[in-house]
Image 1 (cartoon, helix red, strand yellow):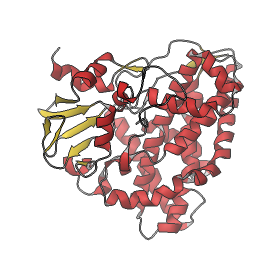
Image 2 (cartoon, rainbow, N blue to C red):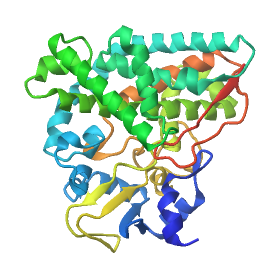
Image 3 (spheres, rainbow, N blue to C red):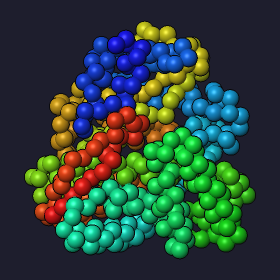
Image 4 (cartoon, helix red, strand yellow):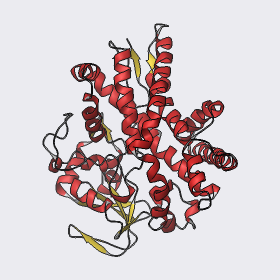
Length: 393
């Protein structure tokens, strides 16, 4: 198989929890790896921790404006919310959101997240009472992140079941491209309507707060796009982390016991699992603003650079034995599971809070929890995860 055929996919592939070995070879031998993609265009894959961090942190030389590159037109139409915007528009919009994601603000959500987790653990327990394995993905890992986004945005209680379905459909690609596009449109239609209603009667959630504080600066479509970006960034990623983290803990019972029994240990476990799993395998693409050189490789203006987060987070330069989970380890720098620089995931503190609440609650409720069947992993994915997680106790 030629390099052109093989390597454009390697950054989306895994062997269980681990990136495929070929990615490590590329990291060792080719710091900046040119790949030809369909259409004859060249894309550059960056895999080392230091280089990935440098590219993600350099918005002066690298642009996120995907819409502008492919000619979609205005920023209003671009996909991905803040992730595909450059300053000054990115700076303006992120400034509105940043105060809502401080730990002080997020702590008001903590009791609600704890209540949601317990409610869905009750449902899991009821399902398991029938004596059959329970798919933890369907019954726990999928709904919790959707409901957390509901609580964050201020989705009315009576609409939350529908919102959970919209969220699930938004990330279900089994129906093909047309079904996926329809689900995305349905989500945006709902969010635009929700913003319009919030503008008339602002609630206590993030949308209501933004409209009270900045309603004259944000039109409905922009605010809905920002909400959709939070849904995109916070749903599938948290779902995958809940599932993969649970699977790893069940395969490592000594660590699971320590999470159950030692208060506060979960903080180190979550940080290390975030690095080790790196569910978002590749960062939003960057585009060279001008001709530039990286590790002796010339990248021309407009060419795409892909940063492998999963490759960077296993880089030996970050520390020893990075292919192992060692909670509390010291590393040469921070992991890149949430990205880096001005585009670092704004919802990172909320995601960390979800994990810190959910893992101990699950393991304490079901101390004999075990995997009860084959666990199918996603074969090729930007967001890595499992398709099902059958458990019993």
